[in-house]
Each structure stands twice: as C-alpha cells, then as structure tokens.
Image 1 (cartoon, rainbow over the protein chains, first blue to last red):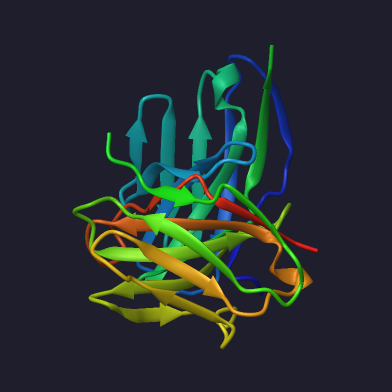
Image 2 (cartoon, rainbow over the protein chains, first blue to last red; image 1 turned 180 degrees about the vertical axis):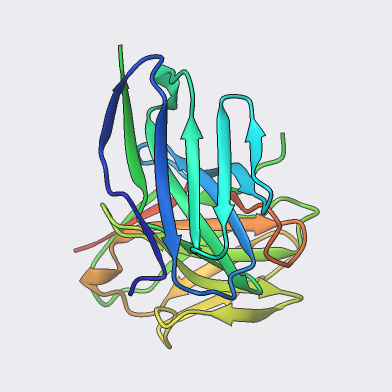
Length: 109
Length: 115
C-alpha cells in the first residue's frame, strides 16, 4: 500500500462550486498533516496545516480523521485561481515529509 | 519576502557527467532539503540536512548523490554520474526548525535533463 494516496482527478468544476478532495495515509504513527498547492511546473507551496480538530482558512476547510487515517480538503466558492494540483503531505517522523501524488483541479468559467 | 533561490533553472547534461545544483536557503532557516519530481509524478524526498550533516535520506539518495554546505549560504546537491532516470525537477527547501509541524519553503526548482 502506498504511503499517501489521493483521488487522482482531474476535477473539473464550474466557478462557485464546492469541491472536496480526499487523502489516506498508511502509517498510523504519522504526526503532522498538510495540504500544499502546486501550480503547473512550479514549486509546492503550503496551503494549510491540518489539525486534529479540523481547521478553516477562508474558503478552505481541512479535516483529519486519525482513526480512519483520512484527510480531506473542502474548497467552497471555487475561483479560477484555485486551479492547481493539491498535494496531501504527511510527516511520519523527523524531517521526512511524504507527498501524495496530488489531485488536479480545474475551475472552469 | 525571503525566498529560497536555486540555480540553474535548467541544466542539460550528457549521461555520465557530474552535475551540481545550487540552492540558497532562507537565511535564518536551519533545516535544508532536496526533493525531486519526475515529470508527471509525485514529489519525492531525497535528503534533509541539519547542523552540517545529513539528518535523513531516502532510498533514492544513493552513493551517486551527495550534499554539501560549502559556505554560510549555499546548499548544493551533486550527482556524480548522471543517468537518464535522473531527469527530473529538483526542489530545494528549507524550514525554520525541525519537527514535522514546520512549513517547508521551496525554491522554484532546477530542471535537469539527462541525454
């Protein structure tokens, strides 16, 4: 089983739509969780950390379910500028951050 | 805004040649990393570096790879004898502190093409 798995997408949604991405991780000892965003041929950039109680940042909501080893990202009121690949990232220990394969989102006008 | 800078942005080399990729991490950061991303694939961890030594490395980071911090600002990745499968985007990253809760700041990447 792969360490971090994500919906492959692509997700094609109209502007204003709500879209949700899922991520599962295999290591039950994983400690920290993140969503990064990567634009085409660019570097990854941190979108948000994911906390056990769930957290929200504007239109973005992240949830963590440790029992199911599952992380989600919800984007409300999608904008054209949200088009990117969303990377689920897990830290198991130390400085080894494990990236998922990413879910590609295209927001259409 | 402080940023991680990488050079070159693109390098083309012949198989078997040595390549050095350079990075300048954010100045007050203590942890440095190299990741790679083969076109169309996921971002993969290569190595982390702290206090002038490797703190962790992946299976990918074999004997043909090495890292160095030759002075107070640069952080380099050397590939001794490049192979076709080394063609990828190489990202340098830095973080302020260790531990999994810290944000990684990535450079724009160095695209390596091995012919």
